[in-house]
Length: 202
Image (cartoon, rainbow, N blue to C red; front, side, top):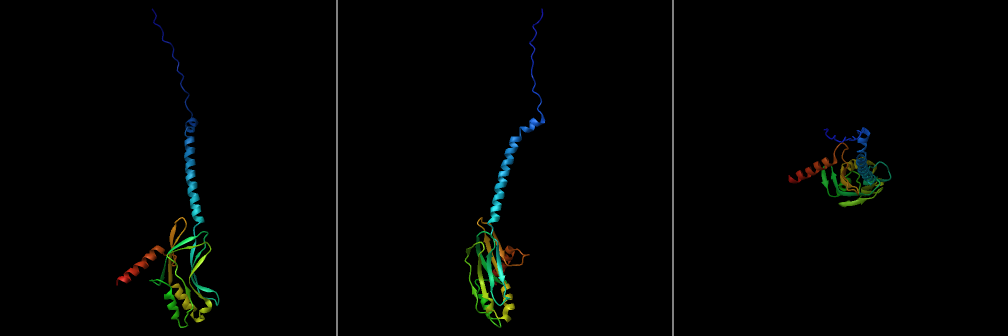
């Protein structure tokens, strides 16, 4: 007696996937990640561009006496394209912190041929300086400086040290000063303030 034969079972195996098919499965994910990274980078680049566009460029100008006409003195100038916020202007004469410009006026009055017609003003603790504008802090008309006193006037002017904190509308702030370019404004300011503290304690 013959046993019944089992039915023949046929199973179709899937064809092996090619490398291209395996890689293409991850392409949409990769594209999405790249698009996200590009969007983040674009936003960052736009913000950096905007910061540079509205970055004020402040200079502290020393206009020395040398000509018979014109104005000499010290002024702040905004040569950038956006408004700047000027904070905490601080004045030193040599290494001594001073509260106003009377000290320089007094020194000019002591010259053999004194310079007496001067104009000065104190900047407030916080003020704005528009693009292209300037603020005179101390000025003298060249015609009011005797020729024999010009060199001494210039030397006194260069003994004045100015420190101001400059901020953009993005609140990017930096300390600007008139010290040698090889020195750090922050470090030099700390040094001078330390000298004032040490002097007051003696």
